[in-house]
Length: 187
Ligand code: GRF
Image (cartoon, rainbow, N blue to C red; front, side):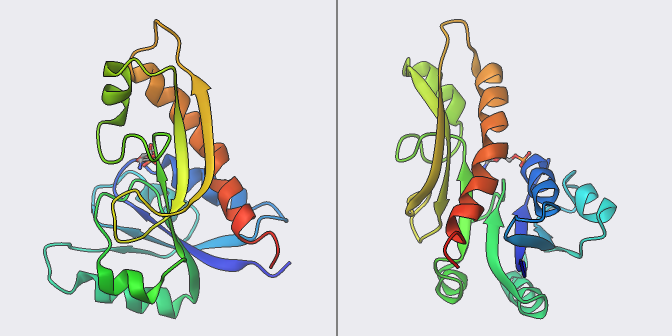
């Protein structure tokens, strides 16, 4: 199988990046992680790129044209899929237009419920029975593109936000690779 080149955008811890790198080592996984982009120079996740000798780019989002340097690197590394894994920046319209249907995001709720931040707190506050995570295509509206994979679990009465986070992030490590496999299933 000839693997396609994927890029992962991060801002922080990078546990999803680590899981995608691990999955990419499997023979039948459709992509290699060929580039990591971070908007945060102190992102812990950058260590996974360094450890695995994956090229990485740190961007300064205060600079007006910072996305141009990303686009350049993406072209250079022949990236065909962009995975947003805890990337805390909005992708511009211009960027989206260039990579439409090629950017996916993981979100810690059962979209369309609980778009945006502080999902765990809001889920608990609303006494939801279930929660989980969603992998979806990115469009110009926040957390609103077409769903690819969703995984859920039942919330126990004693579960607090920290427990929801642990359980959700565990599911994310299955959902993200599954979504990528699904995208390339028939190609
Ligand atoms: C994940 O929970 C993801 O759903 C959210 O940000 C978190 C990133 O975690 N968008 P990590 O950096 O991959 O550990």
